[in-house]
Image (tube, rainbow, N blue to C red; front, side, top):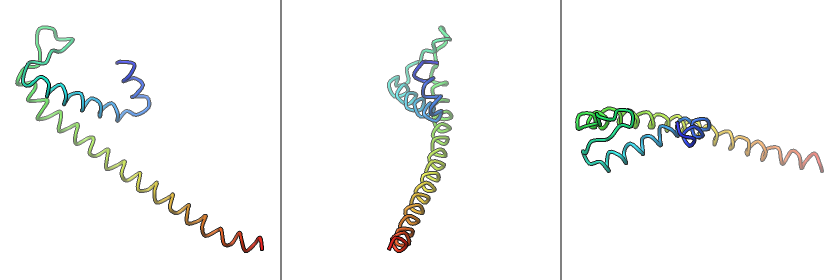
Length: 103
């Protein structure tokens, strides 16, 4: 694993999937149905069949994973925003009581 991916993984493992998804899409677009070399399989690159499997199975699975992560993140953000609003309202509600007690 590269130092870059190792750093991302420790901080945000979902970022690894996002980066892999983007890079895989870029590779598939740039290859335009040409074989894709595999560094550890020197004499057997990914041909049309393997590329089709990537396009039809792996890419949609990654996109489904990322979509679900977005749903979870959106839920967490909504909860966070709700808590922040509650805290602001509590501070606002306490302000008149604090002013009255000081007077």
